Length: 301
Image 1 (tube, one colour):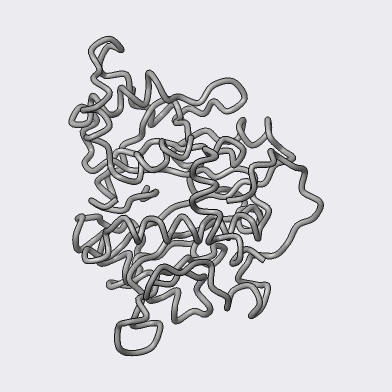
Image 2 (tube, one colour):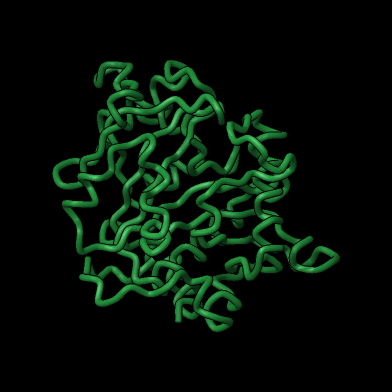
């Protein structure tokens, strides 16, 4: 399962949780005021939702270039387009796009990165969240039934744009989206490269020993796919080297205040080792709320 991966690059006011007072449609169903507007801007780079099937197809092409051509993923879906990464969830998700306005051509030709967002309405249409194949999130959802979950996944950025600025723009867009959609909790799979967890022993052990979600937020890998993360004893872990060895996106989630599930899952189709991330918006560090919020606030309405 390809979760949140930015391949070698790499929200909401801090007011706590609230009960949902209604079920809005997908942001992409809300018309030009929602899906046509920007969610963020840094220099010539803009972030917004895909407006039509042509832009979604372009995002799928970017995903194919990164996941399949670059990272060696293989498709298990018969009849899938040969130049696009697609699955059944695409039709119920919103697709966040990074667009470089300095490039020639139209916006479809200027897309340089993408992130797939599955809000609760989309999961309701599909009957489940994408990550349920790997992690037993049903209990988590039941324990927080009044809260609105957003699943993040399929993140990728073309090599020339794997910079701090692009990461910041993506987070600015996600935060504005969360404000707009009244999201309480972000979650999803994050990926380490390769299918041998031992190759990431210190980083995975750090997450398992020091960063595991507890109590009502605890989540475990499904029993049939569970692989242990505590590959090294707690006292043997060096925090500095563990953090250095982590994918940039995982480090980014740690900085925001995220916690991680119990156990990892090997995804042989995408050639990754996946961990589960859960991030209640109330847990996001004030430092990052202030940092991202100043610019994202005006895009949230």
